[in-house]
Length: 436
Image 1: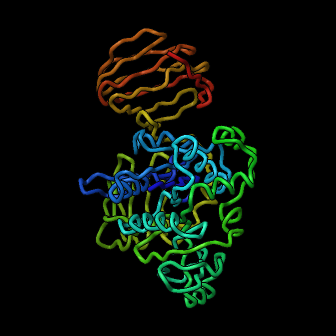
Image 2: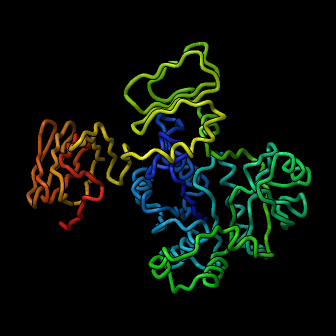
Image 3: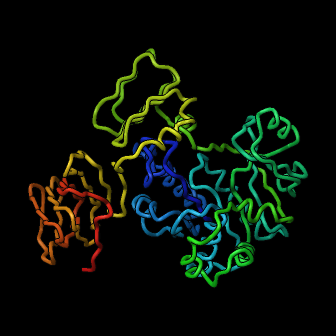
């Protein structure tokens, strides 16, 4: 199975756990059989591998998410990197060119495209395999998955099939309606459009070449920022007469808001939290090392992270985005390919960060022009390379780098470092990557 997972998102609707580099799909909120927590992207990837261990998985994503993907899934998963955001048609066109030119997928093979963040069970991925098989053998150019609606939702578009067969030709598409109109659609056998579809690779490559002038994957990548922002639905689906829809009646939830996310939580709290007996339908997600106490609350979500604290009525939490848009601050937590960092303190002229490096990983060799740095190793063993000189370090060691000095650190074991940055213009832009 060739499967492309669309991993977008601006990190707004699940603030304060999400930010510009940590979208909702990377939040570890689902408990595993071992008692640990996994993210949406880890859960979906695990489920795909359980259904098809040989699946060719590619994640279409922005540059900002690559480090988090490598951190959570490793380096074996394919990544089609979007240089900038250009909506779903350019993203899918780029992923199709990547599969053909970089991964060697044949034009006759089918490809399944779906969002990276549905909350589903294994039967969903079995259905995706069947969707891919249908696309490979069907005369239709596109085969969509239609979700059997469980209520008249105004959040989704609707697909109206010609029949009630498992696979049917599509009669028409309807945009997001009001609830009364949605009831009418459902009465006519309409299905939710969950943004899941399959096609033969050659079809999308041909459509991409018809709409975009490019030679191959590298050429398309280089001119990506010049492309029109347009969705796959508007660019392709609305102009394609040969479309089928395959029904899916299993469990499917869109984890787009705090309200829907808490419905999938197995326990009322994650992290340090105390809820008294008078709390009803209250969920807490606490990433801070301080306790959160809730008393007498009803239908409330509480979330605390280095980015901020949210206390909201669950229904109102769906309207969080405009308020988060007004918040402008330093990113306080991020997962990188080598580990993660968390900002501990920001003062005028200084910033203190806790850096965690995974065993066997290292930072890029780099320098800063406008700040000094001090590393205080608090756990683990590793090596520093300062201006070309390598030195072993372990807990208790302190290393100082003046502005302009090339440096990196290598983790021989899991390594924790308190990094203090000192300077008048501390900025993420003040980093020059170097070869070593």
